[in-house]
Length: 147
Length: 107
Image 1 (cartoon, chains in turn brown, cyan):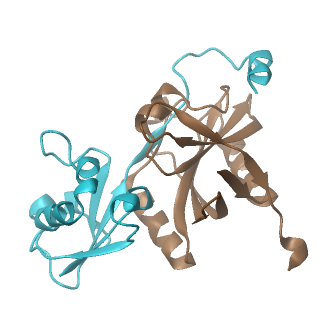
Image 2: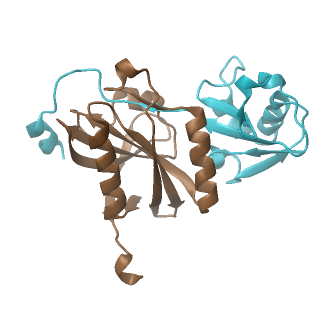
Image 3: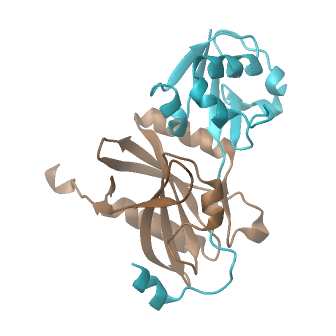
């Protein structure tokens, strides 16, 4: 299983992470899940609604925000396929806190933001038994040329 | 009959169904009916004590049931119930800054 995304959308994720620094930034991924890959086709940056004092190391997308994201995806004919968030001054790997709070099936794109500059983005999916995450290789696919 | 919208992470437990039609006159009743119709979804909606899990949020149309009458909220046939997960996460507790050498080695 791999995660397919365009350069433009990946840049949007990285810019959102950098703009949110020193807080964590987050948003919702829209697309389709195919038998062998997850296709991210659009996204929706969201407010981090965690307590402000802890937004440098925590994010939350509250229920109302998620409901709006679900309705937006529905309107686009897409599914909510995952979540993106940033790790300020920390690697683009899931933390124990991520493990405890992640949902199965969603793809999670984590972007490392080092001193305000976006670094790596890596994609992960929770294992069925919640023991850990599997990394999804990110495949950049730009289709503008074919349009 | 009320339509319940299933969020993507839970569709594996409803045979891939995006929406499920169940009967019941309150939010609590349709949630129980959903769990009876699709038993595999039950542990993801309710904890061991039968309480709805903390990450499960319920909306009737576009209103959070916490602003209505909770699980007692009455439903009519035209209402749609949405199950919406809460989303949270964050980096490791340590304030240690990113060690680039370790990070690259890790890749």
